[in-house]
Length: 532
Image 1: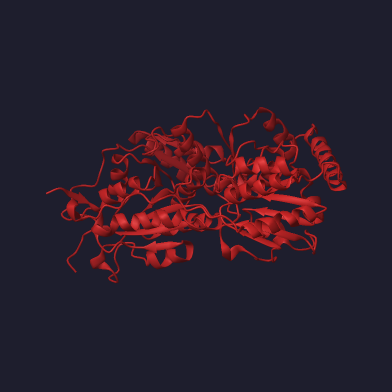
Image 2: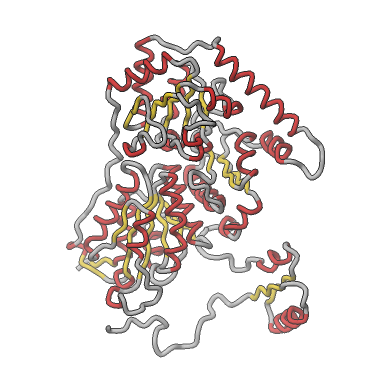
């Protein structure tokens, strides 16, 4: 009889669904799931906080098109991950969260870390379920992965009861579930494409807005051909930067406010008319602006502004349709229009102002000076992670992106604390693909504080277990407190005496413990699985 555990089924099912990365924090009851994932060939990264782990796993989904997995323990562990799930849902990034939960026979009895996890996750995910049996695990994992990438991408949750992790079943009783197919690609109606081109041709002040949906949809090749064939000016949203290079002659990012305010027709590509684009309404937009909206989510059509034309489907496919229609028609927006002159003048004026600020020599340095010099040293193919208030906003205008999916920031949800998790995920992808790209994480000081301990994760190789001699004492010293590294009884006595006698400064004693040290022999396991 070939028996398989629940942990093995979870890991094998994830691997079958082409989930290649897992981020998490191990503990009861999911330790064996992490071990089984590594045995199945999934790259596992142990993080310091579940929130950062979920940020990292969702970044994998955005960068690769396949969801990353986030593994969390029950109760508080799952609750910490909810922030990452909400962020993934708002950004439309696929991620699958695997959460351990209390044993089934202890439900409602006050079990260790008991919490209504499946119900709680429904607010933050597209799909939330617990397999009814070991045999059901592959099908539930397949549905979670499929749901995360089909339609509008997002977060999915799979709950695993603690008693299912090490339970065994005969493999012959488990139905084999193959890898889900890639998301189906749909095209816009031909009549809508024709109508959209007619609206563009009639425009005096057209503008293309490129959102991160175009980046996720791998629309860069079609978009480059369309923009250069049509001659239209374009403006990227923050994470739409790099779909077309920021130094492209048709990019008018430096004239953003003017372009949005005066455009009479906007071709909206994978971007939403939310707070980032001022809802598409006055005073930031012309009250009579006509929107051509391209999106894969029908419910998004008409949010805040009713579109003149709605093009529903895959962004890359629809842009290709527009390109073919424009080529057949022979139309190209003239480069000598008053609109182009207005935009170029504003780009030049704003660039001049930024340059003057960048060349100031006053100390401390201003943002523009710092970013100006950073930009001169960064490689063109680096992935830039940026968060903070002014750090992110000014950095967006000063640090160019030249390749798609090479900028990661606070996103649609405006989430602070995402940066280090994003950077760790981007580095994990780079290690696998080995393209020679550097990951550059530009953090505001407040944003860094949310997940600053993930720098320890960054320093590990392999990134599975905690560094045995991490210098937590030096962290305290760096902020003005007193730090002590303690290896011996004598050092412990001395450090504790000094700390207790100091009423002015906080102290941190970093006491190194034998890794094999454990509790004395116990009569019962600490978590007793009672026969209720």
